[in-house]
Length: 281
Image 1 (cartoon, helix red, strand yellow):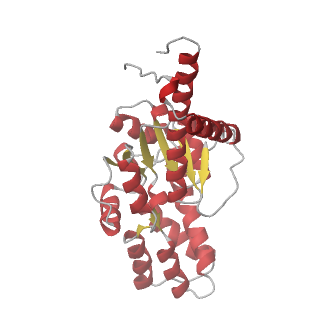
Image 2 (cartoon, helix red, strand yellow; image 1 turned 90 degrees about the vertical axis):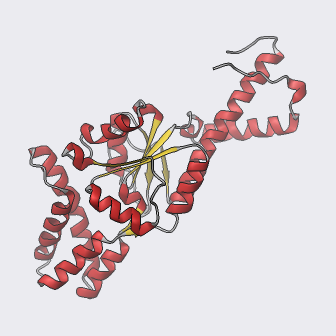
């Protein structure tokens, strides 16, 4: 790519110095924001889809115990996926959801009749996106990011959730780990993103909804972003997210800040090199 070097007389000095100072401040306070922006973003589905309506129905069925049931249900969904990966005993994500619900109910000494069980599983199958998702995805697309969903549920589950959310057509790729018959954090699951985009892992940002997934993505080689809606502490692991944000709009702000810092950095290099009589490639 041919470089463009701006002559210092063509620059507004105050804007350049102000932007440069801001870039240095951001880079000093958060080095990850000084890194080059990723070319593509792969989203965990649960960074996008809101499970609160499902858990609200659990509270309706079991007043006063819905929160405990929901916590046990959700944690066991992922424990079952990890167990199946470790044991080489794959089953579709929907089977993990159903099995985890049955265990959670029994562990709390509750009784769930067939209609209410079907109601809870049906609510899970009808989930939609958080309100901040659609506008942020649109902004990221306009900013030039290639987008994908890379998540555990089957493609049929994902297609329903995307349709429920009005997100059809926003993603270049809709990737289910079901096609690899595994779950994250298996490397084969994360590799679906590099294969689909045709990019190295370091050019792709993975947006996780859980700290363990942010760590797994980082170990794989992705740029790792944690959409930490619950405000949980970091995992006690030797890897984690480069950037942690509380919601989608904050994610867009962080990504656009990376792009701005990179642009300012290139301008400052060009300014310095031209001032010294040098050229930069």
